[in-house]
Length: 420
Image 1 (cartoon, rainbow, N blue to C red):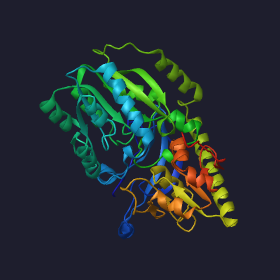
Image 2 (cartoon, rainbow, N blue to C red):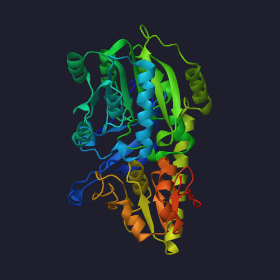
Image 3 (cartoon, one colour):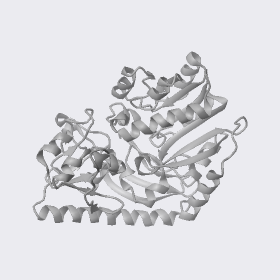
Image 4 (cartoon, rainbow, N blue to C red):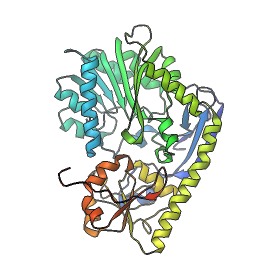
């Protein structure tokens, strides 16, 4: 078999798991394929489960990492929102934790969207990125990037050549790792005694609050709550000393962790408040997730009904934003090219390829602007304001966006002044 189906938790190895959402067979969300490769495409089961012991939410199927990430098509710098976010992030980390001789290591550094701002600030920075095509993009920006997975061997090589790290970062990657214990061992090994591990990851509470089932796919093997992360870090004698909820990707958290024995940062009150909020919302109870699973099917049916009703009226609908979210929606809702003839995307890494599974062509946003369809199904709703500003011409000519979550709806026209 070319995937593994687990019967034990990825964090605590307990077999006390409760399955609560089965998507059936799905393609790899980020596996945007070339037209000539369609016949070789594979589908994999996708089952979501809750661990009664450590409270982690996870998928049960593991597709090998070299299949998932060696030819990866997600480029962070494509969106202005992310570029600005990570520039601010680098400045904040530099001011709070670093000095003139500090070393920063970021694993899963993508195209250097955070690494490059560190370099621009004069910080010694090393990136680790397994996707060869994406690593080259970062290297072209002048970033030092190791094209590999982050593990004990990679960490030892970095320490040998550059010394130990004052700051280790992992952004939008800490959910993508099948064996989460391998990078944890590497972090403990590479981090200075008083060093800090900071990571951003999509947040389970935000996922539940807005029913973001489109964040559940094979690349996202883990869906973290703070209480589950605290359990994981505790296994390696580390602790969370600060946390910040952020709006990136429609709801993420930035987590700050240190070694318990040698870390020097006091535990912020926000950590305890966040833990209490999770417990109040029921993130430690299986009933919460069984209910969520039922809601997902209702959300799916609502979107299908909206799309079908518009098509029956003769309206033309295209997709906007070829992301993992798009793959999930189009496949789960069975929206092939006969209903959604194409999906636009800014990234040249994806254009000319097809949405996995449904095979909707991926084209430039210029096609949307030239053809002026009636509706664009906005998969990139996590960048709503940026998209609305960018597509003012489409909107002013009568084009409308459909937002699929938290409720599928047609968005009222959103106008910005020319000066804005």
